[in-house]
Amino acid sequence: MSEYVYEVRGLSGKQHKGKITASDKPTAVDELRKKGYIVLSVKEEQFKALKTEIYIGNPVKTIHFIVYCRQFATLIRAGVNIVEATSILAAQTESKALKKALIEVASSISKGVSFSQTISEHKRIFPAMFINMVRAGEETGDLEGTLDRLAKFFEKEHVTREKIKSAMTYPATVGGLSIVAVIYLLKSVVPQFVSTFESLHAELPLITRIVLSLSNSIQNQWLMWLVAIVAIVLVYQVAKRNVKGAYAIDYLKLKVPVFGKLKQKGSVALMTRTLASLYASAVPVLQSLAIVEEVVDNKVIGGFIRKSAESLRQGNPLSEPLKQAWVFPPLVTQMIAIGEETGSLDQMLEKIADFYEMDVENTVDRLKSLLEPLLLVVLSGLVGGIVAAIMLPMFSMYSNLS
Image 1 (cartoon, rainbow, N blue to C red):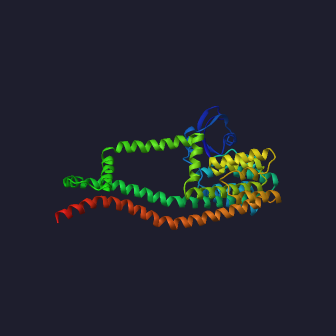
Image 2: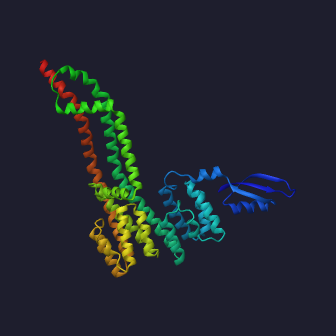
Image 3: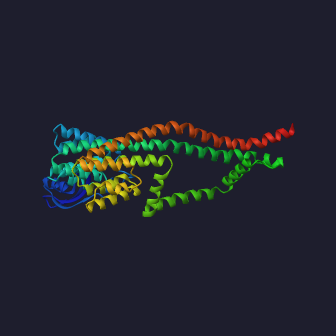
């Protein structure tokens, strides 16, 4: 719902100004006319509109959208009409952005606008895949089945993404703690021993000289370090906005040892799951590939999908260009080729997605069991190295005294 500022003339001829809450402008005008006013002007309140349209990141959390899809499919299957189902879900969703969109969607549907058409006006809330599959479901008369497939798809996608995130979160957290611990030791602990080392008048071990140099740099050249970090972040952000830079970053993500393979498997699972859902919902294959290119969110994989679409447009099989792409294992291309030959492409894509989703889950579990002790050893080694650099000259001094 939105607030509108209105100016009207009453039966006495006197003009009035005020505010009214309505789902859209035409509804606001109708409400005022029902009250016997002559409507002079109706405008949406600017501050309110600005406040409701600005979001940081994705307006709707994935988990909220998954709940919406699953509940929507359940209500439709139970025989509830779309307007009532949308109104019910608008009342109970925890997402303010989704609630606002669903209220407007319910209002538009009640006026005769199709569900797919009205959700296409809220592209920040409803993903392109959702819009296209709903449109196809309406055309084929299988909206209930389409909503079930959408709910399953978003659930599977969420689980796969969360698995990959969890695998990368632990090393990132331990790495951050390691950096903080090392900086603290170099800035606060090591300087306390500098005067003692200078009094020895002896050549210090190499590890001690390195640690002292780093400590001195952090103490006296901290601004240079800060500028360097900010510069790296800015270069990364600029590169992400450049076509070639974004491609290079995504290429490196796939080539990183261990995690690159995990990212590759996750992208393959996401690509095949998306394409299977779209194909099963009778979305045109070229349109499906365009959506898949956007969903995988990797310029390298997206480039190969684009080439596949161009090849398909020329009458070639989908599997042919994929065989030339190093990001797709032979298992993927062979099963797609079999699916094309037997007319069961959607089933083959589902099996590929199931296989790689399970592979991602198993890989993440193995990584966690291996990374935990490995990262603890690395952290212990860093801290232990600094402590050793401090203690070695001390031991030498005590040996000379004895």
